[in-house]
Length: 436
Image 1 (cartoon, helix red, strand yellow):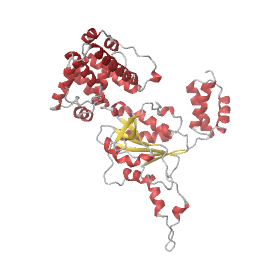
Image 2 (cartoon, rainbow, N blue to C red):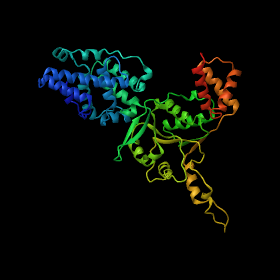
Image 3 (cartoon, helix red, strand yellow):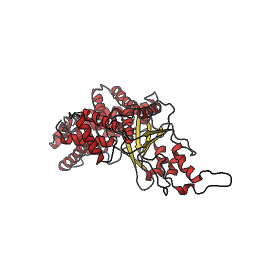
Image 4 (tube, rainbow, N blue to C red):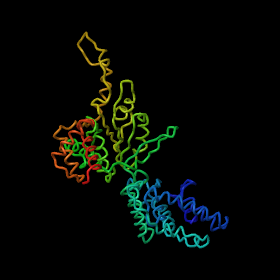
């Protein structure tokens, strides 16, 4: 095994802690006889435990060794895989090195573990080759990743030769990309204290679709039209969704990512205290073959906060043009985002007429940099009842409409007033209380 791993060129840059690297070192010591049986057995069990941990995290099944190798290929960002993501597997000298690597990877895929099992008296490699995962999908770490890994693993098992291996992997890069951006829909960012950024996948993102949000058809259409233009490489605008709380603004953003994920749309959620890192975030993703929504939830600023200046510079007005594969979508309960006070109007000239202050104009100019603004207003009581009835119907609740609306009215009086969120919370209560 270690001889095949040593042949890797494009995929050979591995950290020592990498599981594949550690398996290679294990088999080197086994084949050279440099360690006794007890030590090798302990190392085998340690690595198998690590493999089982990865399998549990990502929901691998059947042949865990094949699943892991597929995962390794999917997540390895190198000049070849990144080129395939952008332009496909075109003819070029780099393909010579890629074929070399896929020849070695196929040998690893087909590796016979019987010798080490017989020598050490273990059967763990046989067990992980026919693994039966516990079916608890609701606890699965990331079903989206699991499905892609197992799909590619199955295609690689069917590959008759290196060409089939090459086509399966490069086809995956073409369809989904490579690395974490290829596997996940949404991300947060984190720093390491030295200015560098890390993208952290959001693995439990709500699987809501736009049809799940009842009403607001005009608002949803504006959002869909803008996003569709974006993913189709046409001109599109930054979007601000504003209005009353609990009306579906954040839900609409999550739904739009779910709707257009298959078209290469990804989301990066960023918080107000991270706005100074916006330029670094954009620099990290501007050359990837995806469309990115930088998402800012519940965006608002108090009069003493100056983070909005970073946002203004990034949206429009900086020296560097914002890349075509990035848009900013924000939600806010405030129409103007920044708290406006009467003091903002105090520096007014009275000699030649009255004008608004420069301070207020600077604050209000932030909203003007969102090309599309969409208002999500609180529903009327009639609309609120319609939302409740539809949600109850979808949940299988069979209460008569008159009783349903009467109870919904009582609920909203003591639970924050009329809104789509209140309606959903009421139906959740009914689901937990009534036998449907």
